[in-house]
Image (cartoon, rainbow, N blue to C red; front, top):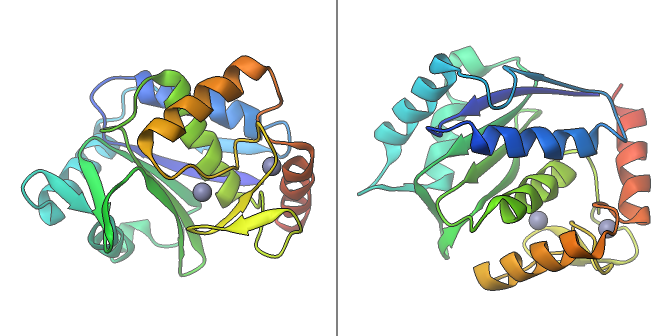
Length: 202
Ligand SMILES: [Zn+2]
Ligand SMILES: [Zn+2]
């Protein structure tokens, strides 16, 4: 079962509403509870993210590792369910000029952090959320036949949201082609992965 605490640091409800759609997709494979409701006004969550960004930001950009280290250390975040954090500023990491964000695990808790800065449109944003949530809930795990190790383990099946694209342009094109194809968001193998993970975490 997915029990997600959301921290939405964006100024409009749009990113939250797209996240809601991605969570509805995930709900085909396991029970999902998320609070506060994505897209709803959440001043506390917004202020939390703004505070963290102000603390670790460097000239308007945020180092993903620094950001995670900061939020991992906050006592109010301990012993909570999985967390999804949405930020507006650009993210970067060691060896990467920028990144959309990613999925990490710390002290038994899963995090998805996503920046909306370089997201092209809602189709693209949906793709990124569905992909990161897939990582969080067991899709395309390391060692599954038919995955490749490329910044983590990814699915190689066509039109599966768990494929990895390296450039922004490829990621946008793939998201749109995938959406147009009408294919299921997660391929058959990734669906099996999600169900299996769900059974092990009830
Ligand atoms: Zn990935
Ligand atoms: Zn797949």
